[in-house]
Amino acid sequence: MNRLFDRNDNLAILIAGIFAVIIGLGISRFVFTSLIPNMLEDFLDITFAGILASLNFAGYLSGSILSIFIKDINQKVILFRIGIFICIINTFVLGITTNETIWIISRLLAGFGGAMAFVVGSAIVMTKLNMESKTKAMGIHFSGIGFSILTTDLINRAVLHFSNSWQISWIVLAIFGIIISIYSMYILSFDKKVDTKIVKHKFDKSIFTFFVIILIIAYFTEGVGFVVQGTFLPDIINTLPGLQGYGNLTWTLVGIAGIPSCIIWLRLAHKYGSVNIIIIALALQAVGILIPTFTNNIYLNLLSGVLYGGTFVGLVGLFMTLGGHLSKGNPVVLMGALTTSYGIGQVIAPLYSVYLIEKFGNYDYALYLTAFIVVSGIVLLLFAKKFQAHNL
Image (cartoon, rainbow, N blue to C red; front, side):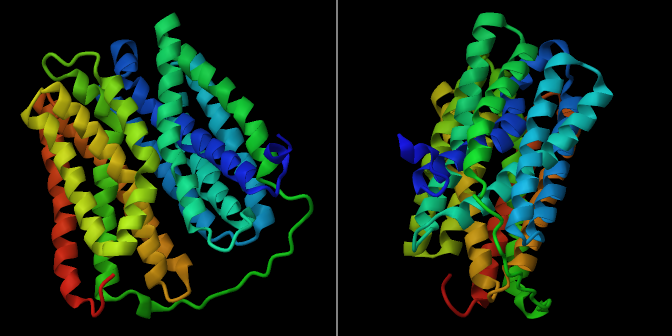
């Protein structure tokens, strides 16, 4: 038991890290998707929901880019705590008001706070872990993305079962966030100020080879592929004939499938090459995106949730790991370029989606375009492989 409250114990660090992911991604972002069907009934319309999602990702993008360039670990701890506070406050706000201006500001700030909690929190976890090889341990940490979806969805469903109020769900989730944040902030800190040597790297444009540029563009297509289902999946399923009410079950399966995905995909990449595995994961994601457009079969549509959850978490790990390998010891600029590309895709996708949904009265054309963009990323990577001298 004492291990769980030891700031330097690896188990405690991993648990605290997963709690931070639940706050930064689950409470601050993914539960919005889980609650969309209920909020559409009496508050949101689909266009405003898409705008809010886009703003949330814009806030996350700005926070992610900022976090990349902060090297001092003591500053990271401060930003991490600020991010946790922002996530919880803005979650609570959504439960007590339906003022649209406040919601706009809140979703933007929640995105920024989420980046501080997740990106900066992950950097602290990486720093604090005391082991020779941290790769497997970080795979466990990133499984927290799946846990964040599953945990917040189960809490949300329990609250809705007893109260039938999405506003109470936001308040309960904020309270839950406060409880787990106490442990997370205690463990993910240091007993004393850490002396850090900040290494400055000169900008090296030689890392931006033809292959790297293609990789950055491909990661943009994955940002698009991630966000459409990540924003609308429960409502997509609920709108299919005969599947009303199955949206939340599908979203639950997304969380379950996401838990082991990063570990599995990274192991496959180590054995068969990162690019090959990225292509396979993108192809499976594209299939999952298209399933709701051609069938209302319950089992196939539940499979679409599994394919989504089983690919998007792993793809983040695959792209970032490959980017680190190609960065020539200077990951900051390349990671920043990859993160920016992915983030632009996240911001754009909800906006074109709501336009197509309003125009055609269903999700089909938004899903067609999304799948086409993801497949374009596959084609680019297949083409780029020819210019890579060695197998990655």
